[in-house]
Length: 340
Image (cartoon, rainbow, N blue to C red):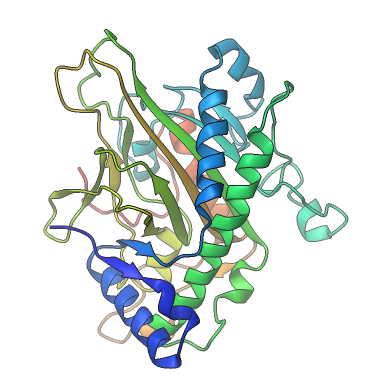
């Protein structure tokens, strides 16, 4: 079983093509909650710059990289060392620490003169943390971030068509969205110890917000829980981006669109040779003050809303803190028994 590949190039063509793109996205969102897209217009040179600059950063000694570690785990910026998070806690499940390291950024040019952003100056819109040494990390990551954000916003426009909503319906929920990107590196070094029982490169979890745009190398490791409850391998097609829906979208649609449990597993083999996997995940999580409640078109007397209304920002913080404090998150869980 494979997740669908949707060519969204027709979105910029005729009304009939836009409708067909929406139909394909709707089908994929209902069955898998994951799909790949081509025709997305994200420049490949932005990916190349991201990979090169991230490689240079992650190659630094640990004590050098840790100069970019935030002082508070609630700050979703800067360097996260391997073993400092366990994402399965975000869906209330105990797990050993995950085997990835990451560099996290948000919006890099924030107008703190605007009260909306100033109110989250030390939270959702806190300044990015950049290396003090000369390097290309900032320009490369910000360049990719801006391109991935445009892809994510285009997808919300497609979502409106797919769900039979007015054009631009999601705009007021995402025009000042909390946005985060993680450049992620999974590396098994030659001769290192085997993973602990149940330990993953990234533990089973759902994403927290509206939509995730993922660039990843065509390397095995990413798995999702399929419609039949089994784990499905996802290896990106050439030039494709992997898209998945988050908890807020599942709550909006009353689970008609899936927020799918996924994980990244350790590499197969004898476990002794080196193995690297690189990716970059962009998260569009909605405006901090956006109230998310079931769409009227996605519930009925026979299928009432499954989740109470929630503010996007509060949900995000509740989800983030569980994995970082290594304790179950208290936020609304859309995973149920999937991925256990």
